[in-house]
Amino acid sequence: TTYDPIDGYVFNFDTLLIPYLPYFSNCHTFDSYIPIWLLVEGKECELPDTYNKTWYRYKYPALLDQDHVKFTGPFDFFGEPIADWCYRTLTCDYEEDLTSTDNVNRWYEVSTGST
Image (cartoon, rainbow, N blue to C red):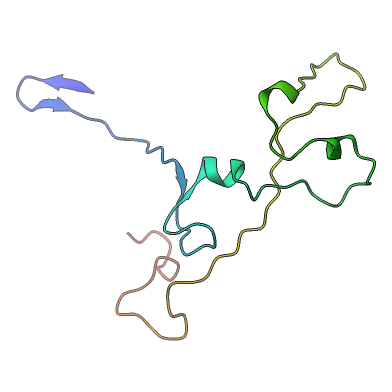
């Protein structure tokens, strides 16, 4: 932000940080927006079932309380870190009728460089 005596405050807008995933809507559990925090910290988070049943991480829930988090540094050889783990499947449905043509091109139908 700069101040110009003639134009007043001039805002240079280069970056937009949004707290949700853009271009996703009509997803199960979510509606028009998928908040990033809810995606990785929701009650649907679980541990993957691809590891051996004796995997040390199965002793803890997917989302830990702060008392069970274990940090391992670069010199903690053979250490086993314990942190939140979120594995989930997200199912979404198209909102557009893909079998018919629309009056204007959809965002994925426009050519490169179009606005």
